[in-house]
Image 1 (cartoon, rainbow, N blue to C red):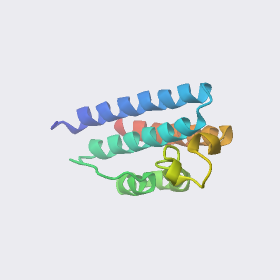
Image 2: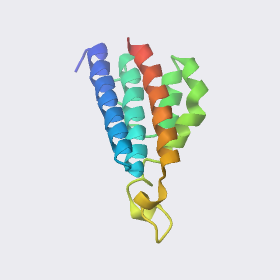
Image 3: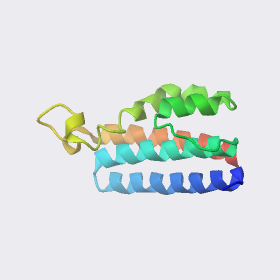
Image 4: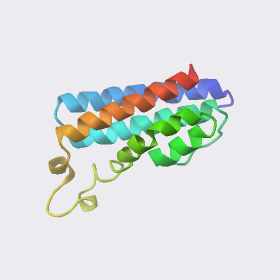
Length: 134
């Protein structure tokens, strides 16, 4: 895809859909999946901003690192880097039993409070990226 705005729009739409999936899992009390999907929605929104700014390929999976990249052209985003870093902890630990202390599994570790915070952070990241694109 050559058109950066069109590509960015595809990514931000997918980010929005993923954020809706996070909220759906929250309602079902699947808090580990809520946290993971909030992280994924944030990744997609940040990648949308990078594509909008002309990136051709983004192979970064860390919210912190993605925020750093986006903030090169949009420094205001650095204000939420600390919050975004919290989402990095949900990339693996929410899905894999060997990423959490034994004998627990992810579904037993992630609580409503984690999911509440993850959704709030993801919404903030999403809105910040949406402003860049629109």
